[in-house]
Amino acid sequence: MNAGIAEQLRLAWVLVRRGLNEVLRVPGASIPGVVAPTIYMLGGYSVFGRLNLLPGFSGDDYLAWILPTAFIQAGVFTGAATGVNLARDIENGWFDRMLLAPAPRRVLVAGVAGSASIRVLLPCVLILVSGWLAGIGWPGAGTLAISIALAALLAAAMACWACGLAMKFKSQDAAPLMQTSGFIAFQLTAIFAPIALLAPWMRAIAQVNPFTYLLDAVRQGWIGEISWHDTWPGLLAIAGMLALAWWFAISRIRRMDA
Image (cartoon, rainbow, N blue to C red; front, side, top):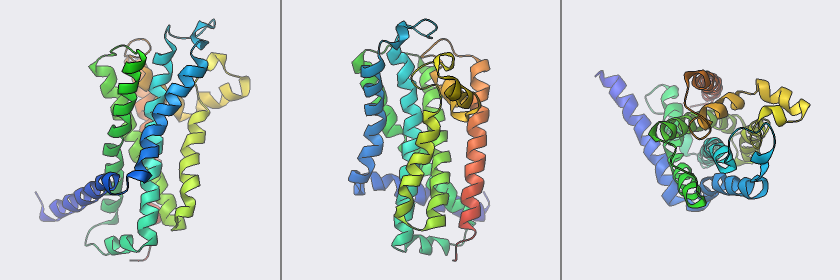
């Protein structure tokens, strides 16, 4: 392997490990993002658990309908938390030293985003354990692989977006924007009920919302069977989100003074 590439990969891995270590070093900052998706899932199930009795509802078990949404929430919250952590590093001057590293700045972004894609496994495990305790059935290895893989990719995309905001504002004061931007976008989709049962104005938004196609892909196996018809729109949606978020993060880090 080219020595330059090896050094870049080593630097990216250092940032990934540092991001993972923050879970142990600053647990108070990590716990809300880990627990929130499960609380959201169980809360939605306890309040709307009988919605599956409505005519036109897809699926016989509402828990199987609401549980996949928690994987998306996990990706959103984990990515946002990564951006908040970076904002803290910018405030205390640590990130300025990383900008002096003899490596392309895209490596720094890749390392931070990579840590988010691994950290999302923590809330995913809690979601699954809570779901099984609540009575959800075994969906199959393929379903779990799709759900966790898309959650990891979304966490990386949201991390790029949140880190771009951190580099733009250079302050943890941007944390609410990092957290609410993805959260609000996800709310405007078919979380609690199928698109056909939504209000007309919300149905129109959900039909063009990329989170809708991502959620449809994650719901495979939990609701219905796994099919390429439901998979490729989700892959296309996450690819577009990741590309735009990556471009935003790269454009912001290139404007920072070394």
